[in-house]
Image 1 (cartoon, protein in one colour):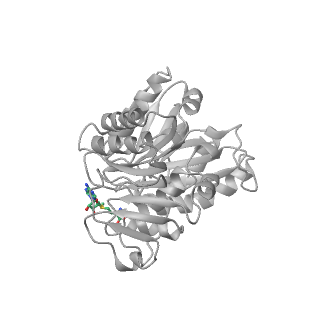
Image 2: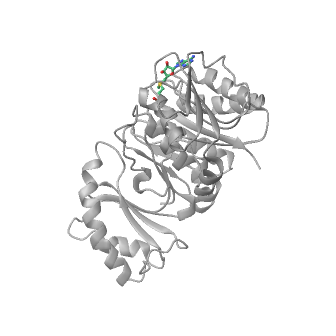
Image 3: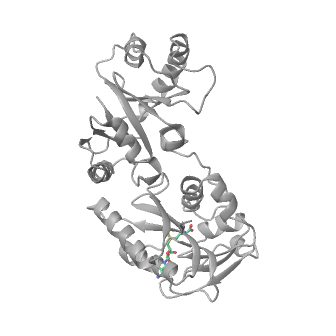
Length: 347
Ligand code: SAM
């Protein structure tokens, strides 16, 4: 069995299946998606697993938390010896690291204990068989063992630079006690997941300016002030006092769809709960008019046809911006019925 396995938010399997199907077709690669609602993963079965893996970079996928290239699917594993069939299926290959995982679904979460203990048993066995390097080696593919049931697992691999750096594709972020809202985690995750380390250092510098549209109670504004940015926070609702006390924030009670800055800003972030097409269009206007250089914004998705709406909104944004941009969009771990988009001038 060959193809790709993607982890996604539970309930978003149809979206990931639609995305993989469309992107594979666009790349001219035949295959079909195997997905079941609430499994937390989708398999795209294709004879052209290698070509598909290269045609669909992880960073470009919206609904995949992780992207893995399937090596084998093992069913009816004997609980007394799950290792031998895995060693047999992996013969002749060599990996730089091992992650044993499970989808982030209600049904598969109880497999976390098995994944941990099985990893401890499998690691030395792989090394003895010469399949796993003695130390982590990022130049080699990483081996993923994905348990979907106690006796049903996928063996898969990924190139470390083309995959999520977090097990299960989930960054474990802690909500600090003075964060004004849980939403703060969304922007923190966006900076981690949608920008690389070089971009974070270059694009987030003390003294830079930003607007936060739909800012109340101040979670995103607070994240920006922790990077020492000066923020204009636009919302009719109140901001938490300690956010205002940073001295870096100006609060404007205005409509985020009409307000524009007097001077061009480095950043605009937007978490307004509104129809996604309306938000996408307004975000495009900001770029077309040169009101900001970089942006992170959320698009709240409808209940149905969410992949279609995503593609439509991203097209609308690009069309409205009418300038070359690098755009990365993802349903983050801390996102619910929404996706987060990062846009920056293309160099
Ligand atoms: N990002 C915020 C945080 O981290 O605390 C949470 C934002 S909350 C999800 C959405 C906010 O958008 C609400 O406070 C609401 O008042 C605001 N909003 C919705 N429509 C707006 C508009 N047209 N102009 C300004 N704010 C708007």
